Length: 348
Image 1: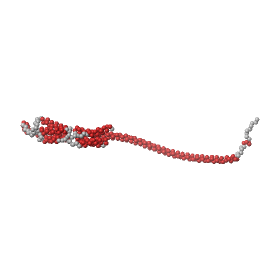
Image 2: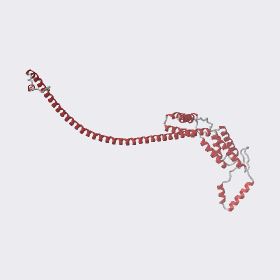
Image 3: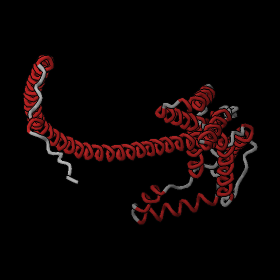
Image 4: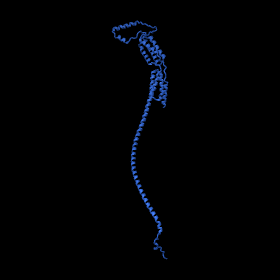
């Protein structure tokens, strides 16, 4: 059996002729494809060119931006450095300002403490002046000193010039008006005149002696005489002492022994001292009674013809006519206002 030979024959290897009708159909499409391909290539080329231009533009922009960014970073760095320098300076200024504020607060507190201290000291002076005025009125009845003390308190309150002190100042002004309306009694003048009379009692001549005691000047004059004159004078004095002639114009003149004159003078001084104490106590009856008794003793036991005795009697009569019993006002309004002010300050 022979193997089957599948090798094509030469006749079979000749390609079959393409039909002319089919080739004519594929020609336009090929042109379209070639035109499309050329159009695509042109578009690709144009797009690539635009991309290159865009890339170059972007690179240029990036370069410019990078340059600007570098400049901006440099400016920012410089700005940051300036800001940091300003912040450090501002910190120093703030530190100094805080220190200045602290010092200002300390000075303000110190000024307030000083002001409060001065105000408290002034208020203490006012309180002391009011207390002194009350003591002078109640214990001594010394109206001028009380008026002076109240005027001092009013002047201190005027320097404070605070609304909370107005009630106290009104009370002080009201009490000052009361004191100024009182009749004037010259108690220091009366006291000095009494003191002069008391000091002169030892020099007043007694009526029972008829003559004053020998003076030291006379004794010195006698001692300056020659011895025979002194001897004659001594003999004459002894002779006069043997017989004593004395005239009494009044029947009630009391005869006193030489030793009793001392006690008479001391008792008269005690009477006048009692009158002086009654003056300070505003005791009108005791004052006049003691002066009256003192005047009677002067008229009875002392030489009324002597000028010093007459002057003492006139002084006692003038003081007897003086009115010392003046009703003195109290300072209750001022003291009440002062206590209220103290309580208000303590509550604060």
